[in-house]
Length: 222
Image (cartoon, rainbow, N blue to C red; front, side, top):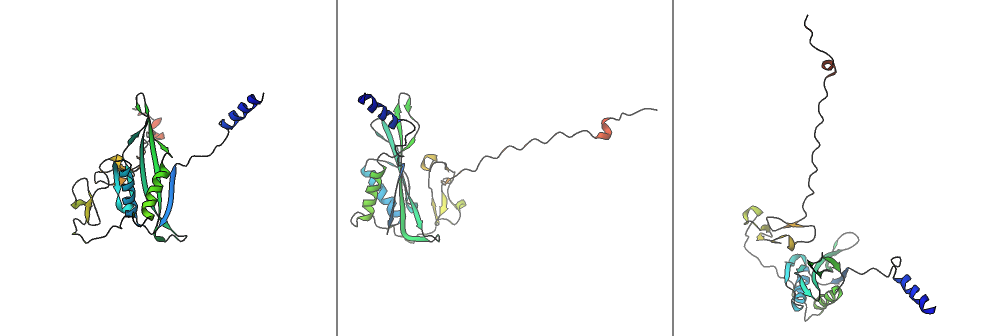
């Protein structure tokens, strides 16, 4: 009887009605004294050491995205993004950034790979290693230096197809939709943009009703 009661108790704890805690699907940490470019450089170093290839890097935005990398019976992909921290009045706190790590996974199935899903697997490990590089003076990447360069463009029309004008240079953020964040699309100028919603079809105009004076009258020949 005691064994049966114990089994019933375990089943009750594991049942759908019991909340055993929500898995943390993102890992974040706020650090001071760093720049977005340093976060991107640190993240690149971590992923290269772990054997990941990089799919997208936006140094000025502190954004890094890996390609899929296979592990036992699954594939993993990580993104590291940087957010500017502001005070209560909305003023930017210089050198204070929040780093976010997101992990995606897909499982091996008979017919191929499953749909991708967000996972907490190894995201804290990635965040710890990125933070270690940023807080250790010997490992922290040097901040990017701005050097005077000759202006390549003033407007996007002066750039070749696939690039746009930013900072007086012809650049591209992406080459296809896979380089962009979820919900964004890569346009013909190499920019990741959220596509506008499709316009709703215009309703057809109602058919004109016959004039009451003409509806019941017929031409009478005297």
